[in-house]
Length: 190
Image (cartoon, rainbow, N blue to C red):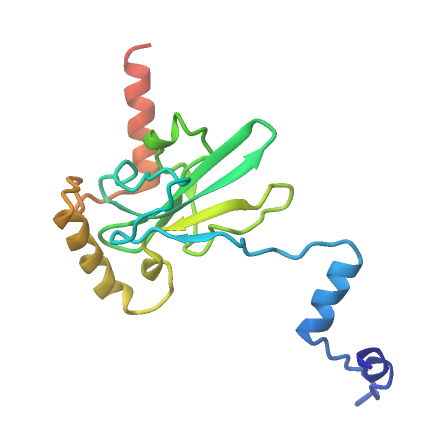
């Protein structure tokens, strides 16, 4: 039925306009072997007031950093095993988003931002990489692009402080400066 509508579309001003409803695009990709970016079935609420399922390790208290708010983390299965990636937003100043490298569980509690990110990056299947097995959303309201983030960020920081998290939320975290500082510290002993 849709194919007939596409074939019967008449040229306008010498141009043929072919409408592509989402259902047709999705069906075409799935039937031809292409996989569209799949949103994982396992999105887990890890809000501060929520209890995580027993099968999910709770990294919330371990991934808070000076100048950052933990947004989420995901788990993906690679050839080398299960790897975790954390996502943060700055806790003060301009909203900047960062992600850690993919790390094995024993190194993950020490994860630090490694690259720039964007708020809704977690859960996206990058070309040639596996999609996440699950994603834990700690502060999904801070991931959305809206003016309310200016109000929500201080509210979230207050909750973290009330829980006893003792990081410096006023610290101005800038990735290039932090990488330079880490490099200088690592070369002091060399």
